[in-house]
Length: 153
Image (cartoon, rainbow, N blue to C red; front, side, top):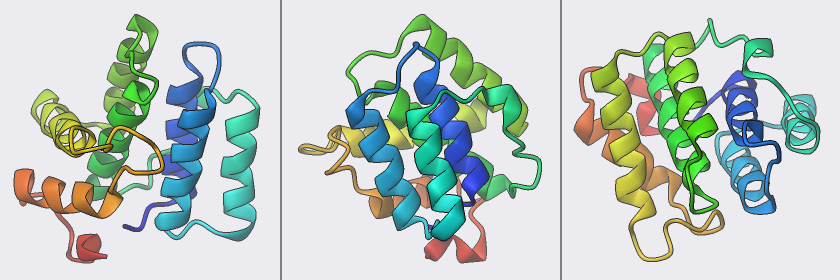
């Protein structure tokens, strides 16, 4: 899985929507960023976004490919549910993220379903256990039309 810093800043913004980014959410977000190859100053910026509130409007996701948009939305769906509840504010923010990413409702639904499929695996809902590689594989199954050649990584 390779995603840019922008994806993870958007994810942090989703996590902050309910007023606080809980430790399990921050743990999952940072683990995902590291697995996605975010390093150095970019990783430090993501880590800062887990400690200090960031607004979705402040994040530029315009350079993301369609595949990266789908993966970002799937991860946001998972992150919003890590604490066990998707609040109405988080649900609304997922809609705003989907709009900002330019994803139609069908792509959003399939991306969220793929994330839920992996979260439902034994201990898959726990940030330290969520299998990001299985998420990528599941997204490729559900959305082969948008899977990029680099999606295999």
